[in-house]
Image 1 (tube, rainbow over the protein chains, first blue to last red):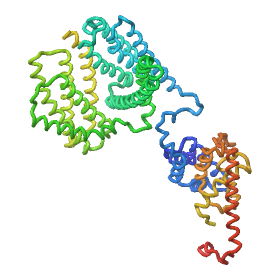
Image 2: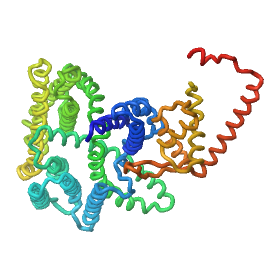
Image 3: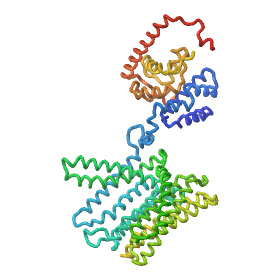
Image 4: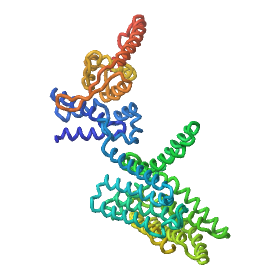
Length: 453
Length: 122
């Protein structure tokens, strides 16, 4: 590459930084620049002089990109649409085909499972127990495929999933007491906790051999947040579609409404799981992550709510008896606080010194710990009274883990604010604490039901 | 000669359409050279601004663009007048004819000052 080529490449890069300048526009402008330089050189100028004059005539990169933005304002938005990376030939690119294949598999399997479990005399609890297994296994397979994690890990993951599938459907404590009966306690725990176990398998499928790296784990945390948000958005769209279809069908074929919903909803959920993952992957460099933005909005609000609640509980005292539902509420609350911490960290530059946002986060965490200490104290009293059940142990164990996590988080945040601990320590702690929750979910699914069955 | 920016902008569309109508399919650099020849270098135009204009004409379907290559093998975008572009050119021509006729009517009555202000400034 000659010096002139280097300078042209630099100029092209400067012009391409304008978000409304497409690669083809840069091609067009570069050809123009080179034509101009060639003509000026023929007239006797040196390459350097010709370059300077040609660039001057084309106009400054800023003015040029501004002019393109005026004409192609739509491109500032269109970047957000996934098709921006589609090839010009018009045929869908390979990753879209892959995504569609896996989405059809996920939707199809879930639909098939629904049809099978609908056979008269079948086990009505089978589908809720196995739905997450079916869908998240396909998601793990999709990620393992697109991330090329290698055959060894894939085989291990496949074996683990197979063992889980067999256990879920064979363990006596997880089977229904009689056909047609409702979910028993052990099955409720499976429905709630199995997705968590499987999410760790999805995580390993996502990370491959790099699952030990803290930074890469944080990537998976980011992926999870964006995936959940896309799923919610797709669900909203799906709800509108199904709702309108229902309203349109009702006057002419009221009896077709329920079958329509039974066919569309499971297939749609299965497909959405894969489409969501594909959207996150294909857009991660295009749009700012949404989860950290939501976190930034809600961290101060939750901090305020938690402080007010903690003060309220401290003043009012716990006059009435606590029940498991309330403990579940507090588990969810702590989970939300942990998510705020995690996604706040996910967008935080580890090198930046601690700031106001870290203080707000600390306030939220401390208030949450105080609140939870009050609840836990009352729970222990209650368990002493009524004894342990699988559900209580599950709720209590999660609560303990969350509190320990948040206490360490608070301590590390204080250290950060005192400039004694680098921010990266907190991130490393959070990412290494994550597998503990997976192990706990595994215990809840496979150890607690037999223990208390 | 210094021509007002707004006037250049107003002339740009009919000028480009007319150059394409006259010489057939062409590309940005050649169109600019033609502009320079036609105006004897008096019409100052920042070269880069031609491309957003061509893209706007393409969006309005006044021109059709195809990718070809230059003799040196670089990607080059050629623009060709469409029917709608021809119609647009006729419309522009009608408007400019009215403008020049109107101005021409009054120019005849107002003799130019012996020393134009532009020259004095120079």
